[in-house]
Length: 108
Image 1 (cartoon, helix red, strand yellow):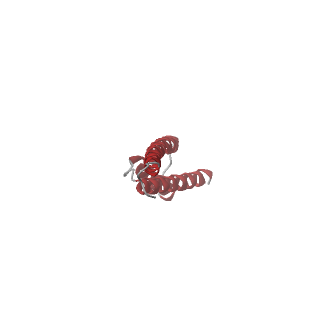
Image 2 (cartoon, rainbow, N blue to C red):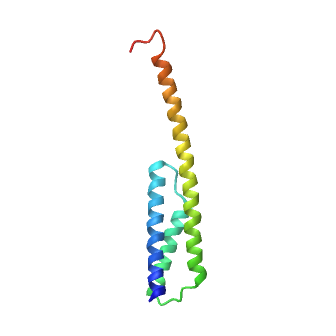
Image 3 (tube, rainbow, N blue to C red):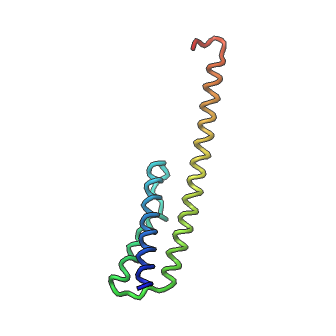
């Protein structure tokens, strides 16, 4: 009972994590990432294992957790790069706007 509950809980965490990462990657234009896709595939495999009466090896559970941590770290690094690019482009636009407003011949 305990292992089955653990398997279902891990499957839900993997599926939700993968879906949220895919959604944020699509909204930010990062592209299709292999980590979240693999998370969702592993979530289906982990969730199906108790239903099929498979004995879930401990290495599969550990591997799924390692995949979750690695994918989350990679996604966080990608989001950090997106934020840096956005911050840089916003400061360039602000600087151009201030220059435009401070021109003596501009009529605003």
